[in-house]
Length: 74
Image 1: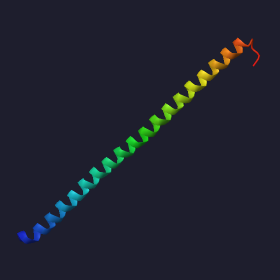
Image 2: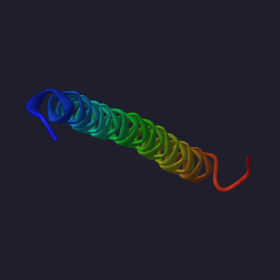
Image 3: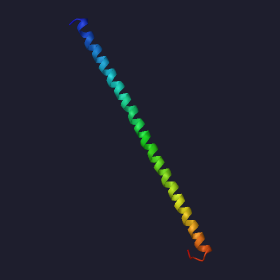
Image 4: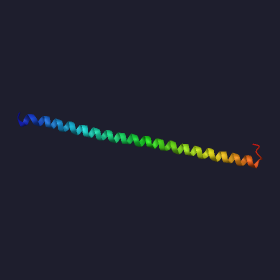
């Protein structure tokens, strides 16, 4: 085996390893982006739920105050 026969195989192996490492890195970045997107959606849903709960509680308090002011007849 001469050096000329080994060199193309080594070059191909280096290219293959480079492609695999870059692909793994890109997959890792894509996974993190998807996790961030899902976290953002979940955070938005929690904020929305908290706003709805706060609104419901305020409306219930307002109804109780109105019922108290009108003697319970609403």
